[in-house]
Image 1: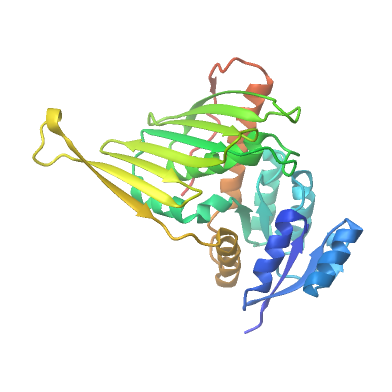
Image 2: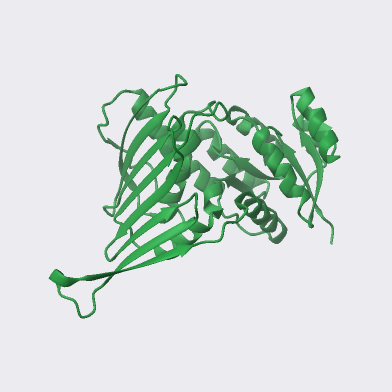
Length: 328
């Protein structure tokens, strides 16, 4: 069986890890990396013994699949180029700068019969996988994602950098249409939104309350979910899932019993799991775990949250009926 030919486009901090994962896979041959910065390009080529190019167009006929790990403002250009060449793509989040660009990529992927996966890494977190098995009809979701300041990733605001992870998780759990979004936030260190809070209301009554900061002292990645007869708490960093369930059998309303179960989930290499899933979907011709449509919907909500903050609208809800329910 011939190996799939892979390349990594953009080998900065995160792209370097993509290179390592492809090199560790037996069914893939990493044939090239692309990096515009000359010194970094030479360094990666020497370190891993792989051909290195300055222009992604030079390898479009030499590969079957690529990871696109360039800055977000170049996602569309690079992704469209590879899709037009019939190459399968894994694009880091946020998928593009605009919803229109994401829609164009979805059309190109369909036209050229290419797999289009978006790099929402948390989907491969064991805690998220376990969470999805427990959630049926959530009534309230609360998420906190806080991190100390780092210069890396500040080409976008905190909504597109951090909160979008939780937006994607929420949208994968709640399928009815969004009916309103309100948000607030402020700049702390970058001149862009560094702290954000958003409230998303769905047609079935579920409410998601999301908070994100990249100017915090401590690092937090957590989520709580309330359903009719259960409470779920997730620590994404430490892979811990706490489930509290109400035992309705034999109990009066005044004396309901709640049983708790704590699951310590084994940590995994989520980036390796993501790339292995991408490669497997390409090899099998199946849908990716995170589709281009998923990436577009998360982007659409994130952009609306940021817009409301930048418009200084004091958190007054905006109806967003045009945000269609997820297609599953």
